[in-house]
Image (tube, rainbow, N blue to C red; front, side, top):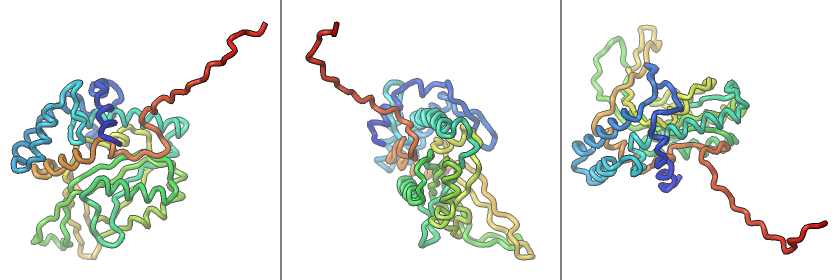
Length: 307
């Protein structure tokens, strides 16, 4: 998607309001973000960029860009919480409408699939680039002949401990932190069952990512579409694996924490570079209104009417 299309999208002020669509979000099942909350988040991000990115000219430039975002003069930055919310609302409304048409008003034949694009030759995860994760998953879906899906790319900062904790031993190793992009797509059930083995082979398990693919039946909740292109991001801290006396895994879990200041700056710069609609994955389901095709009909030279 082009920058011009991003700007055209967010200039529709109705998307910046508090009307439908509505959905619940987060583990606490909170209402979706309001326009006032998005404006507050934008001002907070401007302060973070100015304070913690003052040595970076690009961070300061982005801060000024976000600071100038206002009605009828939207910045259309992928890092802007207000413009991101407008794009999210557009995506959720149209994705729900298109999915219902494709599923013949039934969601029980759709699957919600989360994919972390693990590297096939190493244990590393494609962390740095949203585009890299997006196009790796796109290539995999097309290779599996899945031609209809709706989705988006989410980002989190994951902290993991590379050791095995035994019998409550102290942790002598520092935690590793890195940005991880993962793709969330809604796919027709039959297409997923046909291609599941190939997709899992393309994205195998690694020591860092023991579960790179998660698939569940899609229940039609709008929060799934909103999650694809959400505008709030977390730092996921892994609770270290604990091995009991019998050698069996007792605990491996994650908990969400707020991003650190340097992570907010780094991610904002990356989102600004990527753009708003470049996080979307669309195939076989149109979300953007196509341009009308003008067809000129030649006038007939015979203007007389038969009697």
